[in-house]
Image 1: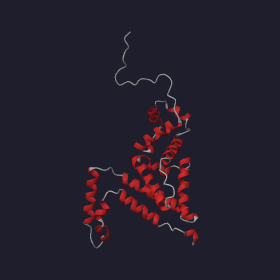
Image 2: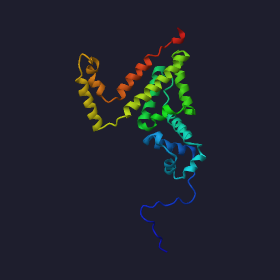
Image 3: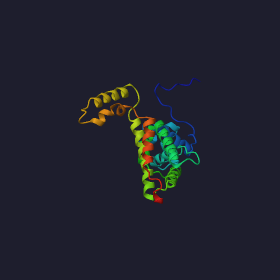
Image 4: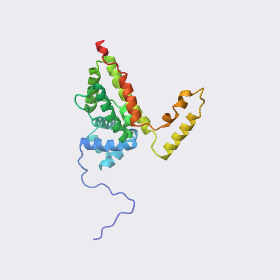
Length: 228
């Protein structure tokens, strides 16, 4: 018996039992999709399609999209590499924030997620505890330790957002060249600093600029404040 082929362009209906999923598989798929297209654009249907199931099957593992996004954020933070044991607290903080930045650079779609979702998962709690412990090792008082924790995340997340806002390439290079010409042509009397720093201001930010800024932020933490 000859089997009739379906018309071109038609979608075959799913047959048989849907694949058995795990919590981790759902999170991994959601993280891939959100990392590419942005967490705000992640919906249940594309996620279900990526996993080969119907959308309602996802509710077996998560009550709603918000719970999935919380799990994606915690999964991301779980990949932050811990500093080496016995590192000086400043070096350890640099190590943690540098690892966090590298993660965000590979998944820019998750940047917004880091500031829109609460850090309440087990990985997030561990990362927060490790950072606060390092800051307390610097003898910061309670208020300064929390402020420093927030400042480090704000600086790192903001820097990555600035880095990834414009895609490297000819268009970006052309825009930066135009900015350089504009800055360099400004009035020396009205804009002396901008004109002097024109070349640096138009340069695409990268590792060097991030590290300089990060060290500057950390250097401002008053080590030994609780002991004074």
